[in-house]
Length: 44
Image 1 (cartoon, rainbow, N blue to C red):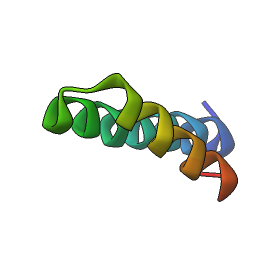
Image 2: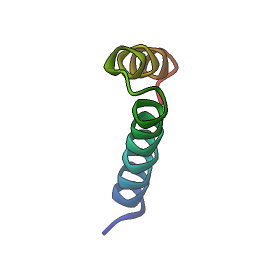
Image 3: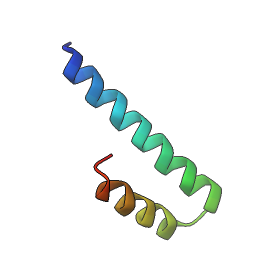
Image 4: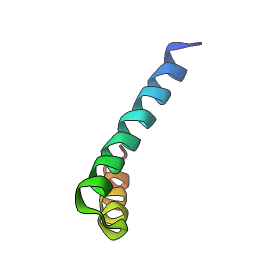
């Protein structure tokens, strides 16, 4: 596995954990969609 592949996997895992925590904390899908959109604006 190349370093680039590992970086993509790590970034996707962190991204998913952040969105999961937001959804768990707010118990609302709309908040997750808003955070997802904001994170996409900044290319996370």
